Length: 254
Image (cartoon, rainbow, N blue to C red; front, top):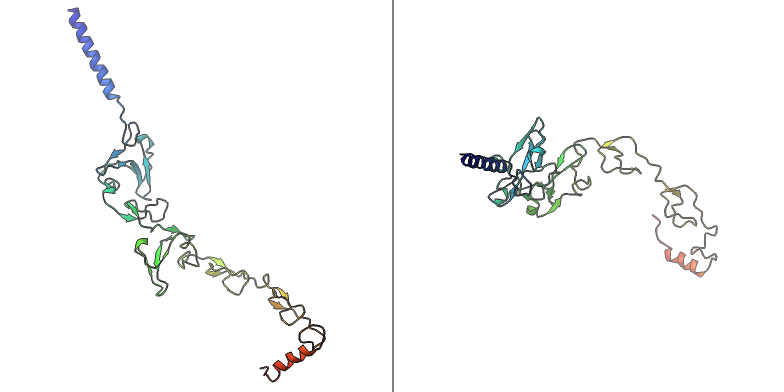
């Protein structure tokens, strides 16, 4: 009798141990995370769960449920959820902007087409475009489809290259091209134009003894030789001066 009771106790103990081991078993997901949420899709890609904000449309990938810090506008999207656009995404190519930092980031895109935009100082999303320098036509398309000038990157944020940059907001500055501090990017004159700081006074007559090639404004200081007949300025009125005079004789001064 005691042997039977002992055998039953041993069997119960083994069952309890098996249940404990199974219930506390730790599995590693396709990303190598213990008890992680990642799953491998039908394309063979390891897809992670993420927190999605349905107001800002931001996506934050998480490895486990503990990492999912949900706010009032957030939901946790599991890898194989029916509404998860990343699941089986690489099985088909979707062109678009794949840079999460771009103002036109497309979370559905699988292949970047060069159309990622930049937010200007006015808060507007400026998109790259194809520019035809002959017809001045602008078309918004993929970089690979542009047969003319592709305006993107530094060119896109340069007002001289992209007239749309900061076009919707006021950019104060000097708008008069003749001013010393003319600002090409300004679209609203702020009265700061300066016409004096770049003016260099001096003698602007090339035939003067004190001619200044850097002078932008003549100050009346020009000095000329007192010997007017010394045309070649060698200090002597000689044959060369006479020849120079005769070579010009008869020409109209008008």
